[in-house]
Image 1 (tube, helix red, strand yellow):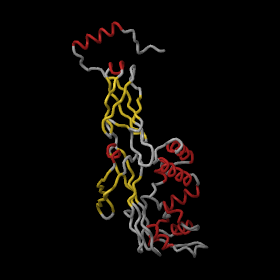
Image 2 (cartoon, helix red, strand yellow; image 1 turned 180 degrees about the horizontal axis):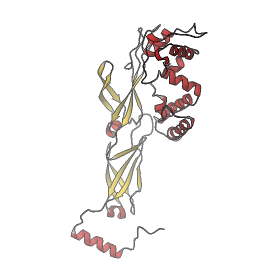
Image 3 (cartoon, one colour; image 1 turned 60 degrees about the horizontal axis):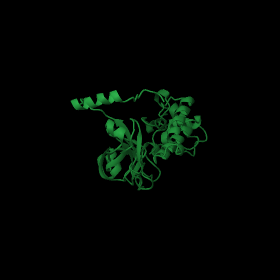
Image 4 (cartoon, rainbow, N blue to C red; image 1 turned 120 degrees about the horizontal axis):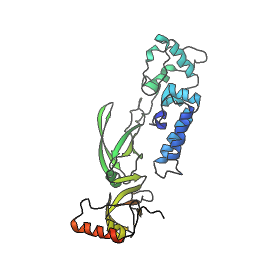
Length: 315
């Protein structure tokens, strides 16, 4: 089930046209497939695009605000029926806000207005609010978040997941494909909302969220890690071991490397079952002894005397 459109754009429900446009442009730049190669970005871009085009049009936005995510299923003229019903409610309040967080008392609805004889309001309200329906209705798709460590996302495998639902706690055995990325959805067919009138259930989608890691940083399928080296390893060059989610790898540090230099290990990032794996980027971090020994200090002092190297000199 798609997120609330306001939530998808990250704007309040009171957002004006300028705020909607600014949010859309920012998110479109972030998720556009030509810019973001993350496989999940295309779906996020589609969601942002749909949300903006619904909310940017005053008429469709009004229908969405009134009827919620099912607004496209509402026949033309239902707004008049809704307004007429609101006019007869105690206190004269219209029953708007059928979206998230609203409540509605079906028993207080009375229809007034012309040209509405062909609208079955009971059936309309039943389908929207879980009441009586004229026929079978498939269950709704549902979403839940699945938090994984970088290592779990890298390896994949089986995972037991417990989720709270209207029927209490339910457990699922989930197969996680190797190399899943943040925002990717895992589909559990038939595990969503129940259908009515003999119709089948919806699907459950688990949205992957990669937890922050003390050592690794993820950018799509590329992995970034700090590579700690000694001053002499950086100055003279060396081959240094580095931990990756797939095990230890070797990085060749060229002589004369300074902190901040990025060394690329092609194909050592997150795996990709359907394409090229990501890369691993090891960023050099030169470390010095916190409490050098006597001989170490002597050597550093000697180096300071004989070297004319000035790191603050501009070239």
